Length: 279
Image (tube, rainbow, N blue to C red; front, side, top):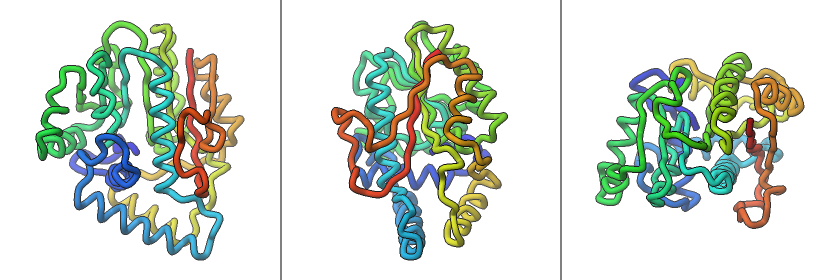
C-alpha cells in the first residue's frame, strides 16, 4: 500500500502491514522488508479484524486478499513483457527486489524521501539486501509521485506502470489527474500498460465500529490521510479510466483469474479487483 500521502518522516501503518503480509504470504524477497515493527502492526491489525469478523462473518480477509492482489499484479507485470517497470508509491513492496533479479529488466520504484530512506536502511541489514540495493537495474527514486516527471526516470521504450494501493487514497479529481498523466505516458510509448488495484467504493462493506477505529488509527499514523470512499460503482470507475485516455481496460478478480496465475487462498473470503489499462 502506498505511503505517498503520508507526511515526510512518517512510515504509513499500511506500508508496515503490507510488508509483513508479503512475508506472511512467503513471497519472494519479502523478508528483506519485514521488521519487528511490521510484525507488531500485522498482528495487532489482524487481531482487531478477527474480532470484527466474529460479529460480521461476511467481512473479507485482509491478509489473504492482499497476497492475492500482489500475486495477480506480479502476473500482469510479467505478461506485459516490458523491459522496464515503474512502481509508483512503492512503499515496502518486495516486487522490485524480486523482479530485478532479472538483469535484463529495469525496475524503478518511487516514493517519498523518508520511505525510500527507510527502505534503503532495511536493505542494508543483510548481505542479500545490500546486494539487491547495489543492482544497476534497480533504481529507488525519492519523489512525490503526483509531481514526478515520468520521462526523467525512464529509459526510452514501453513501460509497465504499477500503482498498487495508491488510487484508493486519492479522491476522484486526484485519481483522474494522475490517470490522465499515465494514459498520456502509455500512449506516447506503444506497448506500455498501467496495472493497479481499486475496489469500487460502492462494493466495499461498511467498516463498522472496529473498522472505524482502525481507520482513525491509520489516520493518526498518516497525519490525516484516509481511503477515499465516494460511492462510485464499477461502471463509473471504468468510465473514469476511459475518460482519462485509456482505450482498453480489463479487470481481474482472484477467483476469475487464469489458472496459470496460481492465485493463492481462493477458498478464503476476499475482495480484490485488479485493473490493466492500455492507451
